[in-house]
Image (cartoon, rainbow, N blue to C red; front, side, top):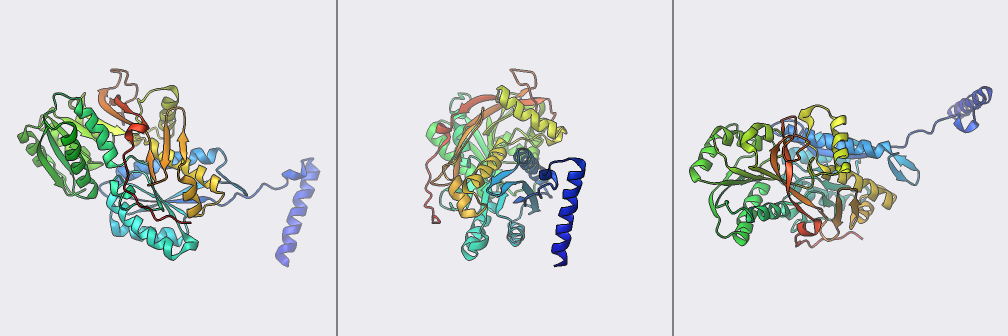
Length: 429
């Protein structure tokens, strides 16, 4: 009773003050902010791949800031801000499952992860079980870069959505470029020894055999992920093989240290990479990478056009340190599509948001993507770009202040990037 009386007296005092000051009575009290819609990020924020985790966090944070700047996610009771909480998994499966327990204990409805397909597969399995056991606390898994194809094929889940092109989609684009390279005769495959790295090598072998049967695979290596400090022995093997090109899915420090070793060995080998356009790789290669290093992605800073340039420049203004310059359009797309799906569902309940995401489309002035309902794989364009010096051949922006940027070599419309899926999804009514 005392609390109620005190509350009424407070409102009465505010009313009297407004009247005294001649203010409209409707301004007597600002509306209390609505609860935030939380997103839990599970990824490596420490250890060998902390730079990759930090890059993800920056990309997600600026995307969330954009949504919040326009009033947040609009639900029937008003605009709710988005809020990001990070959970450091140190790139380990067990640590990731522990982090997931923290997410569910805090009733966070959305979890995001990407830097490790092994982790993603473990999370999918755990989330499937959790959502079945606790239907009043279900959560949705949004994947921004775990690209093992099984995640939207044999292991597809109603609770999982992937916003990156998977390894076979990326390899299909890279091998289309290799197909047109008449000088490519001998290729060396090297990758990280886990599900993703093994899939990259397998896809490369299969697709090259179909598209360029004259090409020889002259060597293949899988190395422990995040454990190798000196790649000189691997560089020596590549040099001894006589390879004129290397295909690798390596990322983070495993890519940077590999390209440094190849540079130090004095090789002018071409690199066809998934992630060679950031996290130190361009600076590590220097002039040795000019015209030789290629990367495949859904977008890159020199893709071109006023709106694309503006998007990149806004990121650089928000994060001016050149070391923070690793921009992923797909993470911006993911946050925007999640916000729209929540608004369409009019709730944060996982099953309802999943239904709203199925078949959803994202479109701005320079990107067009669609979430395929049958397997929850985002279908979007891909660029294969080649390393150049800033200022040469129309390269306006460099990567990480290195003086080197990337120029589009081939653009693949979304219709050309889509591959068939073997997903047999158990749907939730």
